[in-house]
Length: 179
Image 1 (cartoon, rainbow, N blue to C red):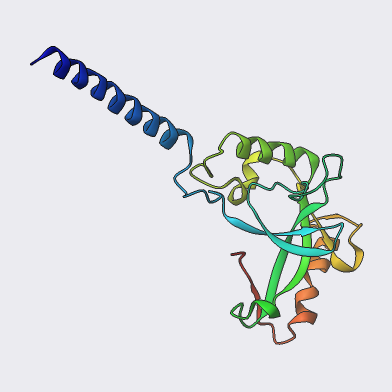
Image 2 (cartoon, rainbow, N blue to C red):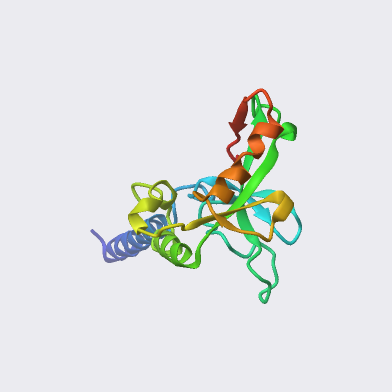
């Protein structure tokens, strides 16, 4: 091989190796989601505006909704959206109640999510809350008394969930997933 050909081969190989290395680093660091949030979409609710919106599982309630000023309070919570019969018509879905985590459970779930920026571990922390061992860790409020929070499994919590009986008198309430 001529010296100039050998030199060009070495330079070309070095450029190819750098490009491949850069690609592998970006691929390893970036989640394989095409820029989408790797966490499951979730219905959220802004207590300040009184409006539901689609957020993400990584939004651990209570949280600051996107676009909130840095000094704003954490007014983002989760909301359970239901419809009578079917969720096919999104306009017929209604917010049934809102929920958030107690401070203790919030910090534990937030820790799991922060440790997994590429998406949920084998099992979403939301599907196995019992493993955290926090009694009464989920607090719910009715939309008619949004400032009164009760443990989900308390008598008051069960009463709040009873709203579905009045909203869907046929007993055909269906939980609508966020999309």
